[in-house]
Image (cartoon, rainbow, N blue to C red; front, side):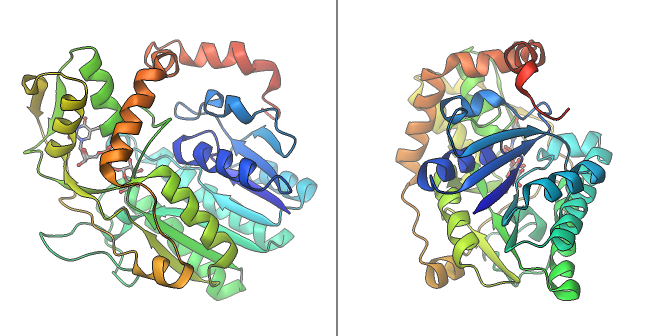
Length: 340
Ligand SMILES: Cc1cn([C@H]2C[C@H](O)[C@@H](COP(=O)(O)OP(=O)(O)O[C@H]3O[C@H](CO)[C@@H](O)[C@H](O)[C@H]3O)O2)c(=O)[nH]c1=O
C-alpha cells in the first residue's frame, strides 16, 4: 500500500505522517512538500530514516512534476494536506492561495484520475461554511459560504473534488476540520504565537473584541479521524471533524497566560481582521456514529501538553522566528531534498 501525503512537512501533515509511519509499518509513505515558509523538515526528524518513509520536495501545482511522480510511484492513496493556510496572509496576497489550493488540487485530481487511485482524500476546513451566530453547528449539509480569500480557495478546491467524483467517478472523501492545536503548530497561528510572545513578555495582539469563537481540536485526534475516513469513509462523502471545545479567543489567551504565570496586562486589543468570522462550531455526529471516531484529548489536558511542548522545544521555534530559518533548512537538508 503506497500513500502520497502532500504538505507532510507542515503542522497537520507532519503529525499525520508520523502517526501513519508508526501505525502502519507495512505502508510506504511518500511525503511531498514544497517547503515553503510553513513547511519544516525538522518536524519529522524523529522518523526521517524510517524504512517506510520517503521525502520528496516539489509543488502540487506543477503538473508535469506531479504526473511524473504519479507515474513513477503508482500511489494507492492520495491525501492532500498541502495548502496555503493562513487567513491573514490571504487578505494581503490571495493569488498564491488560488495557485496552491485550487490549481494544486486540480493537478492532483487530474493525476489521480489518469493513473487511478483507491482513494483521494482532501483535507479541508470548517471555514468553507462561513460563520455562525451564537447558536447552531456546521453539519456536512451546511451550504458553503466562504468569507476570506483563504476559505474561498478551500471551498473551490472542495467543489472540484466533489465534481471529480460526480463527473469522473473518482473515489474521494473530503474532511472538514475545526481549529487544530498541538505540537509543531507554526507560530503565526493564535495559540503558538501567544505562547511565544508571552514567553518573551511581548504584547499579545487580540483582534477586535476577542470574543470570536473557535472549536479547538487536538491534531492527534484529527489524525485519527483522517485515518478512519481513509480506510472506512464512504466514497463521495464529506466528514466534519470537530473537537466540541468552543472557546473565545480571550479565554484561550488567558489560559495560556495562566499556565505560563504571566500577567493579563500583556493582552492588547488591536484592529480587527477584515471579514473576521465570528464563530465556528462543528457537529461531528456523522464521523462518530458512522466511523466510530472518539477523540482522546479534552482541551484542558491538550492545551497543557501543547504549552509544555513549546517550553521543551525552544530550539524548534527559535529557529523559525529567528529569520534564519530558510538558511538553516538549506544547510541541514540542502543535499537531501530530492526533486527541486
Ligand atoms: C494570529 C491571531 C489570531 N487571532 C484570532 C483570529 C481568530 O479568531 C483566532 C484564530 O486565528 P488563527 O490562528 O489565525 O486561525 P483561524 O483564522 O481560525 O484559521 C485556522 O483554523 C482553520 C480551521 O477553522 C484553518 O482552516 C486555518 O488554516 C487555520 O489557520 O484568533 C487574534 O486575535 N490575534 C492573532 O494574532
